[in-house]
Length: 360
Image (cartoon, rainbow, N blue to C red; front, side, top):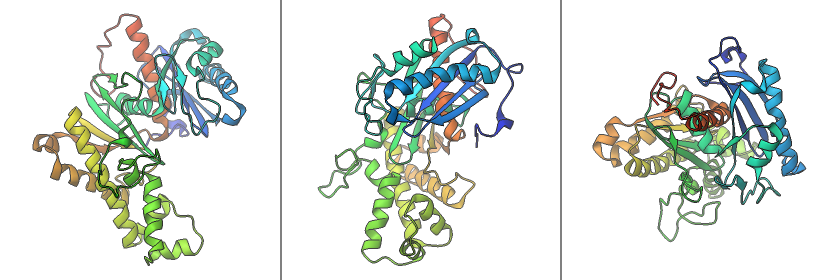
């Protein structure tokens, strides 16, 4: 898996295909930033704590300052940059560049972050939802680089994602498209409550938060086994602990992980029937170390099984379903890639050359 901390995956400015693009990925805990070349290859990388408690203007100032930092690290000048992209947690108004309802970043509601970062870095900034940016990163240079259209899932504390069709990100009229975790999968009166407050959403059945909640419910009912023993011994109940217990044969942990995968399969079929993508890619923290791990392999196979059983036959047969390749780097690479798309459109380019290893 791609990892920016592994310098062996970087290239030098001398090896790069110009021009350069900067990607900024703002999270509630950390900021990840990188300069990539025209092929999406990392030339320089920088990360630091977000310090959202210091307020939005401080964050915008440091985001803008990272552009100069990255140029210094890469040994390039600011004039060699063709674009800067910024991905932030949503929801946002992508047209105005303003953040809204920022629960994990108090004080940012209504802040014009796109324009403030642009002011601090001296470049026009392309703005995107962080999950959309990660989706574009995978589409541009990751697992989706051979695909013409793609659905991307981010599995973590919640469930997010993105949809890319022919080099265009689905954003929606209100900047709220691809809130994939809020697909309604259960309309029964007993449907589980989603963290958003509504019932029956996919996120209530397949996110890390819901997986832990369901495990706690089973343990409270008296479930026994290795997982129960480790929690009773004081270990914190997390998806990582559950996966570890499942590897060691704990039936409850394995059952719950596969049940989450079944729900993800249902959500995937819904999007396949709406969008008909060439491929579906799963990323985020809750991917159980990918197909190289027995739990990751079992999770993805259970998703594929649900697709085989419920999707239209041609879609079930021909749609690829795989894990992401870029890990936590997808966000800054995708933000940079979206700035590249914007720059090329502004210059009148048709962007006709192929993506690295694949199609447009």
